[in-house]
Length: 244
Image 1 (cartoon, rainbow, N blue to C red):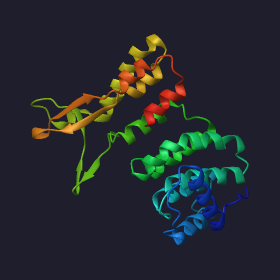
Image 2: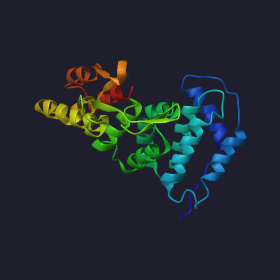
Image 3: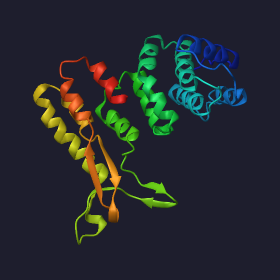
Image 4: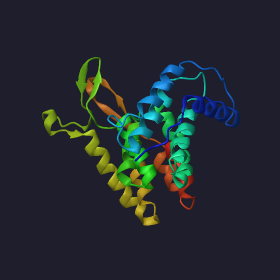
């Protein structure tokens, strides 16, 4: 299947119009060569065989490479929307703009990587952003609590939720396992008033802080309380609060 691709001239025009209608900002161009490279690379079917692969690289590159003085996150959304429209995804475009507005910020800060971004974009196209597993992945990514091995100062470090005195780390509870358990417990409480999914999302919204001797303490954010108070509000409004 042949795809229609935006040109560099179209991308620059889209940037100008986007900045004009979305709050303004500097119009300066910093690295059009890099933007042109992104637009060229997505046409390579060997590296980006599927439409989702192409759209992911276009969004990621436009958002991260800082090709313009201002509006790079906005141009990522606008260029992605244009790419969708050029290829007949008319009914997906509005959903894409809505969902990616907050996602773009976390891509720019590096909290959402290319792999997760691809999963998100695939879900947007398929209309599957409500999938619980994906929402939990996004929440944990933007909270910095993905439970993976992290590299700090050249050393691998794994996070734990609970340590046991006199027991080796292999018998401690990993943070990712703990967060999943908390999510399910929060879901069971929130299901009583029809907010099970939101409870599942809010449950693991804890932030770890390092303490003496590697101990960790946790504080509950206002997230769960906000979900409880949001009972009766439209789900889109609640979701907006979650992503903000």
